Length: 160
Image (cartoon, rainbow, N blue to C red; front, side, top):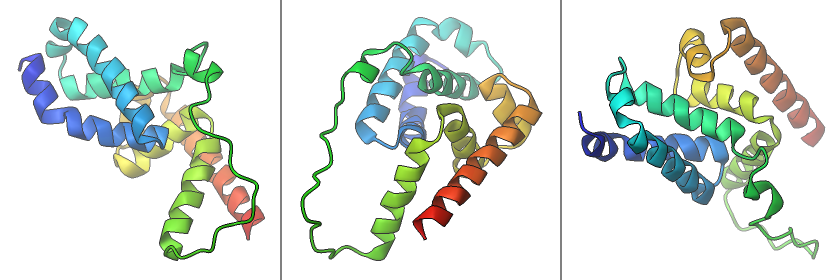
């Protein structure tokens, strides 16, 4: 498989995965673009791997986990501050409100915990494969998922 064939076949799936990780379609596009550039530069090695898609997904996940460490993204806030004015009348469906609230809760989780949740519940991967992608032990994956879910439960309890 050539790089071009891989990109044509898997780019949309990688972008969906990145949106789930970042919670922001624009950051997801940047993340996928950076990952795909790195993949193209190392394509010979990636093409020899048992599963090029798994290799690139691992690259993307590692890039996400390490993305803000010392990066310009940490220093430049790309979103405006929330308006503290009176709330706008709610005319959206409750499901949209709930979805936004869950995105907010997920965005507060540490990156590795969020990555484990996305890999488990969005990508539907078993613990062993998640551990391989994140480069850690299976027990670490289970503990990360447990901690992330406990944090989400506590956040939900505070909101109610």
